[in-house]
Figure 1: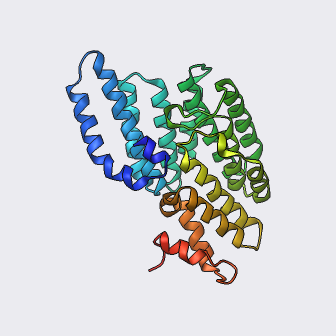
Figure 2: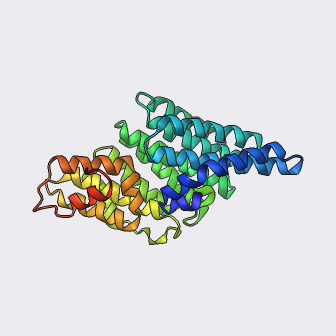
Figure 3: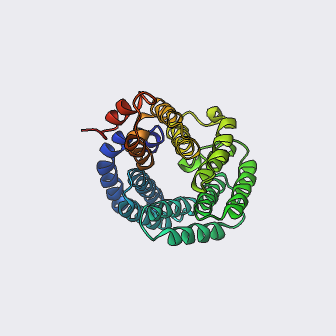
Length: 286
């Protein structure tokens, strides 16, 4: 499921989820002794995948519920790294709920502090992902200096990790730090900075499975282009590129769909001939 999710095949994940969660839950009831920890790790991983999917489509309540269940399973497995990833997902779910940004940030900062200094690759990756989320949150609240400090901390963690990895499905590594620098600039309203960073960004170093992460870059750059210029065609081109890289990223992602609706509201068909067909493929036109 995580592999499919990262390949932006969200429909396939949704089809698998009910049966996988059912089997994983049953496994925890049947397993004993040395197998008990493994069973709860599998259950935590399944609920993390469920939380990711709910976040992607904008269902904050379900994302938070499934992240909480992932956290419980990770604690029962005594797996600190999985618990940190579950905390990351809980924060993502809270960010989808009105008025819960402060709670989301508290979860992230508490989780980072709880991990402390780590050197295990899984713990490093989980901590790095949390720090990157903290950077994006700070940027969105206008705390650009603090966001920069978080990005610098994440870059240090990525340097310790040594390369672009995908431990515990975090995609964490040096390239992902730059990707989040783009996201942070967009959240801060620094569109020109986001486009400048994006122009230098090379996603070819990312593990091949991270299709959705590559497509997300173009969604963020579309948002930046829409803010920085009256030429809306650049934003459409980025969304078309996101669709080429991972079509379901555009069709399911609430951010991408909001951008499409914004573009449609001020559509100039001669300037953006690809917009209406893209919106139709995304199911936004009757």
